Length: 318
Image (cartoon, rainbow, N blue to C red; front, side, top):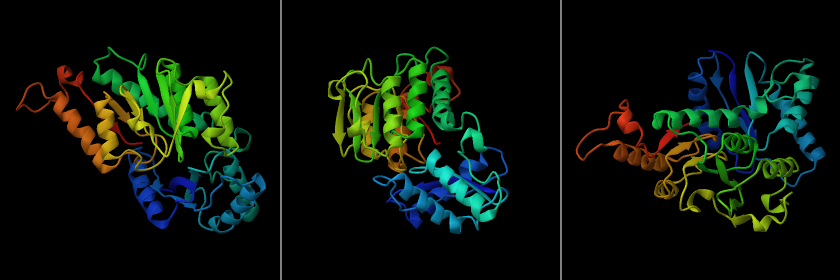
């Protein structure tokens, strides 16, 4: 079929079961692209947080010592995932080149000056928002866009950052970001996050620091945001339009999905790998089907523009 394609994850929760789950999903994601690619996933339970650059480099070199025997441009082409960004890809690529004595396109996510691609860092986050933009246009018969929409986003890594920036560019209001230890919620939902705040978060994540270490370029962070420890953002709002899970798998439960529907969310799209649980998808589908029925006892016609405009929730898997 073609080389395997999928990400490498460095996170303490990584185990064989999770990698099998992600790899299985990757097969179907790659199949619908129409490209000749299989699916794969890999990683380690190594935690980059709290480690120095040298410690991370040494781990990447050791990791690639074995991995280099199993990958190649026509065999398996890994990318980054949680805990594996441009720096880690650089360390891994340098080690591969050393062990195989070859400069090959064996990893995606490389820097532009050593074989990387333009707009690769932005692609997933931007693509997610462009997709939702089409969802909104379709469901509203072209009468609505992101302009004025209140958008909750989870995660604070590459996908979440660029999704937030594109939402803001299109006129939406981003009101949350999060990490594994908690969620950062905007107090003023009319303003939300600014590009400057998101740039500060990007710098923070590059240093592997927590959102609690964030210092606002516009003043005291506590005046603009609330940090809710041990929580995800989905239940923290009384009114929302769009929810974009961009952190990790199974990050929206059935109860959280019910909270989103209750808050008025009409559009849900996953920037993360299978961010919604089966229970959450059932809730969204039940809401969508009930809201598109024009009267009791009738079945909705998804191709009828009169029912499309009333769609409560649409789900898209990354």
